[in-house]
Length: 434
Image 1: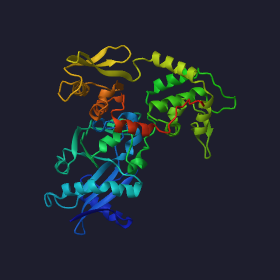
Image 2: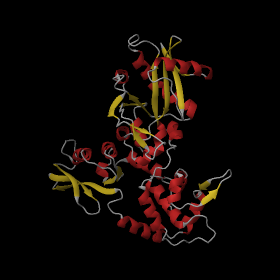
Image 3: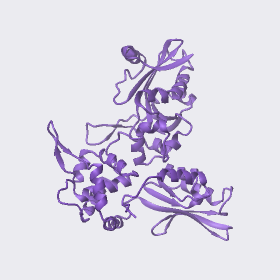
């Protein structure tokens, strides 16, 4: 019988020694959150595992989950990586041990991780070197192959964040619960996962750096209603607010946390003031919740909207695309489903449909889903009416690289109730007293 447990401190030396002897890559040297587990068979060590933080960006994994960049940045911690898996026996000696150990780990890992780090992860990932192993044990344990990596590694030693290592590997993933991807890409998380919902991924902007600087330059033209004794320029504060909303944060607290994760280089570019910290060195401080709240209470929203709208119009084509998904019919017997530019009305993709509603493959809903599957929705927001307020349609939009904005009607009582629960207690930034 196999059991899995976390190693004790007095076992670390033995763990590293065995790992160095049995694994072709030698001993693990991990940074960040790390969990070392041992699998025992009848009280004897049979296998070793090292789990740690997931890769920052993996195109195939992010598409599998349905992540956009900002959602990935916030929920990065909810994916964990099997960094090392070591079988403590000769090849072929225990043929089923590897798959059994992996299956056991997938069942027990969420609770073990929560005991150490305060939350449960939702998805596991790992890499397999094809020159050493075909990954048969992962397939037998129910892991899903997502193709090959491009062979790049993160590096802080050069000017490039990623450098080629000329050694691509196979990527495998394993949901740690049936609804893992739905939870990772959805609007809310299970309570036991909330502790990992605020990732330590810093410096993720919803715009390119030049675009963010251009936005800052434009917003510096908004009249400042505050008194002279202010620390932060209005252009900087409005830029931070706008970037926070673009990054998907729904309230002022989330925006303040988001601003705190900007890198010092980004803070310099957005003209945040310099403060001298104890111990030497310069530090660019971000505004507090009170500073933002005070500004919003005095700001004329119409003037802000006018300047921001002018900037958006000037950068049309460079900002996220706005697409509309809709079907048009002649007497409900023949029609066309189109994915069109919401501003110009020019269709980007079209397909015929024979009925508005129904279960057939030619009804609008099925045609729309198939149309989404073959479309590149990168950097696009797709709006649709209540007919397309379906899990499959929204998921396919996310899987194709876009974000969805769909209408909800009263005939979908559970969906409407969930939306109302999410919105309850949230007020607009510019709320006015009645």
